[in-house]
Length: 263
View 1 (cartoon, helix red, strand yellow):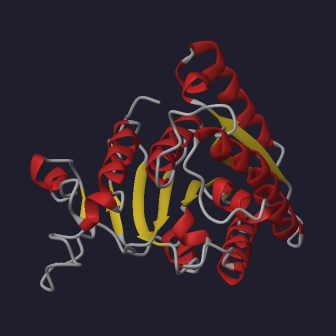
View 2 (cartoon, helix red, strand yellow):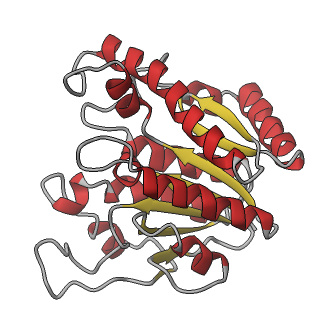
């Protein structure tokens, strides 16, 4: 399979904001092993601004846009250094791809991006994708970029004509209700269609699920499903679950892509 894996800042870091070394090492090891097994892997990774904050010894996440962009520029180097080092231990070559909305929606640029992804995968490289936060501002949220990267990962799944997108987050999947507030909430293992009832489960702006990014995850699901690509939401605290997913086991919530979807 051709699999796009998206990891958010909450998956990559501890509560302190520092890199969760054990988890990132495990993620790279599992993705390398799946690549060895014959799968084509693409990684969409958040975390540049957070790593830049640490590298620049800032007291906290900056509130002004120029400092956010500066932190992203510094942090992206650190992020790619980390991935390059870890994947190289398993003899895999990584490639950095930084995208903006303009790159995606401009027809000529979009074609160039698709050609780049195609050739990288043909050459056996592992593309690592992020938003180009050093030069754009609309993708950088006040709190985090996880929502934008949910959407970005779905776009990458379209561009690479992936079979599957896996969103690794801090939740197990889509529930029948907000599990933080309703102890009777149960996980929904399979979604065949984004009905109004399913979309309503994302919660409003004041809910735990809504502020946690479920709205953007369902937006990503719509993009994937329309393109004929399956999408899974699962807990990023367990990178080993990627093995189970690749083996076809039920993990998290799977959104079924429409057969014959237009890429």
